[in-house]
Amino acid sequence: MLTTGCSTGLLNQKAEDGEDLHWRIVTHQVPGTSRYDSTIPLFVETVAEETDGKFIIEPFGGGTLFPITETYDNVSTGTVQGAAIFSGYWTNKDPVFNLASIPGDPLQSADEHYLRSEAVEPIFASAYEGAGIKYLGAFDYGPSEIFMTTSKIETLGDFAGLSLRATGVAGLYFDQLGANSISIAGPELYTAMQLGTVDGAEFNDYLVNSEMGLHEVTDYLIEPVLHTGPVSDKDLIFNEEAWDSLPETYKDAIRTAQEATKRASAGDYAESNEEAKKIWDDAGVETVVLPDAEADEARRIAYEWLGEFAHENNRTLEYVKKYIAVLRELGYVEEADTIEAEMKKAE
Image 1 (tube, one colour):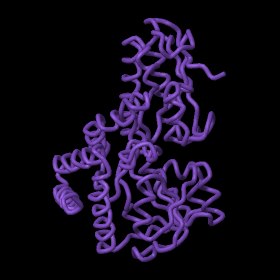
Image 2 (tube, rainbow, N blue to C red; image 1 turned 90 degrees about the vertical axis):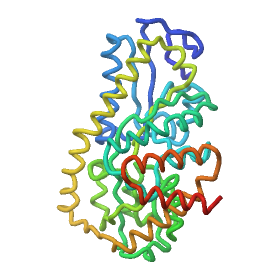
Image 3 (cartoon, helix red, strand yellow; image 1 turned 180 degrees about the vertical axis):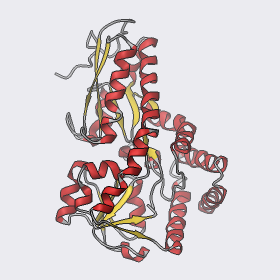
Image 4 (cartoon, one colour; image 1 turned 120 degrees about the vertical axis):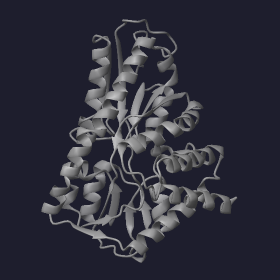
């Protein structure tokens, strides 16, 4: 039997300050890669330090306990207490989770991403709440993903008929460009590209993808990356009853650890990612830069889609409005105006 890890084994009993607790947390990232190693161990170690070793959270990498896509339900039922996971996996739960990443997103830096993340945090929190899941917001910073292909793409017309690994809104967007999106778990991507099961993928950054060996099965990098800017690689969620059972000191320890991972991922990790570009150059992977006219048309298609998708439900509408406000605050006025115009057109 899988237990909750509280000393009583019951989610609805209160833990006491200073009580020994052993919880479990899962993630979609793979141990041995930087997006796991630079954040997950830091998080659990910080929680332990903040509670004098009383509160131990045991981490499990992607797919270890159950398929990644079943994480939402396993946190909801309390099979595990928590997860540091990409919210875009739950698009079948609420349309707003499609907006965990945004096509045509112009944001560039960690600071810009965290500003957006804080602005939309209440919206995601309300979507999780109905399932008994406590949403604590961004866990860490993920630099812009890279778009890897085995087929050369020089115009938007070259997307036609390609099979691309994509999840959530990325799949919807690439379908708009004429490609066929396929859902493939990250650990299976190397083999899929090697065997030609997919022609390309927008996945993690230079660093993690090189650690997974993907530079060995990639011929081209396509820029600009048309789908997404910086994102929360992982959001922090907990079973709501388990969270409510914690004393405030333990909740504070989790929040402190969360801030530590956010800072770490926006600092040394981001720098290491930039340095990893050389690995792809040395492997002979060619970078193809789309002409400005093609990139502009791709963004137009993205904003048209976003303007229409905003009307899926009240949460998506509120999310896009918040996003537009953040864009204006950060100086992306033209992008904000375009998305807003597309929203009004779709009313």
